Length: 349
Ligand code: TXA
Ligand code: MG
Image (cartoon, rainbow, N blue to C red):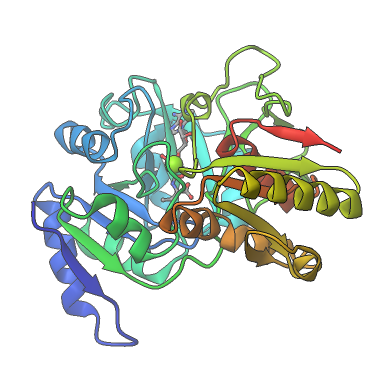
């Protein structure tokens, strides 16, 4: 299949949005930027389009898709039994990196929700995403625009690497500013439950709606109740091609163990990559060193995470060694993705 790549300019993008909107209305697939990661979009209310999305990504069809809407009021067209706390939360955080899970109306096909009777809904903040939803008149089902299991995509180049030839259009709208997927809150449980941590943190949510719990695996990857509530959380995710190891402990010790391991692997003929921070970049002396961001501002780390993993793939790195990042607020979301990418390979030093 020919994939048309359309680059957004500073202004005069009406033609691009119009053309992509038509592709969506005709049942085609369009990858587009959002503020979190790029999405692989198609008409959410058309089951045959959902099948195409799963096929293009190589994603298991029991892993449901998030539906992207353009107006808060659209929520009632897709979901029922909406608790008042949902409105408190979305009035505060929409448009933005927050996804809500609710009981679905029958208009939403089972093919979009992986057979569940619930639906995930998000109103993105990115201007291009919103233009696309509003101009197309289509509710857009969009998983992250990557091959299933690979790191998510935060630039059009990443999407081209994974999906060129498999979808109709890729809109190049520059880098996703946040770089990690939305926080998912499930409102079909008695107590609202965070199924995936993200930019909107547990504290921010509980400040608005009170009690909220978080359904996270421990560092060995096991969930308290045996199975995660978001089907996608059980699959291998975000993984680079090289083997990724996380080193956790006092930073000085972490740096010294990473240096030792880098040298040992280098001597064995392996191509070694190191994920460093602004604070530690000068302390490493072996391997390919990439700076992910600054510990003083975790947002810089979040926005570079997938890009760094993909850069190591581009140069065929065999082993990637990374420092752990502090848990709590945004660190929860960063560590959640990093742990999965590493298949829970954590070395405590
Ligand atoms: O930031 C984001 O959320 C991005 C952008 C494109 O909007 N999208 C995204 O989609 O991350 P995806 O498909 O890669 O991840 C959606 C996650 C999966 O883990 C899926 O299992 C979960 O949401 N999910 C979707 N619908 C659900 C439902 N009804 N119940 C429980 N989990 C659900
Ligand atoms: Mg994804």
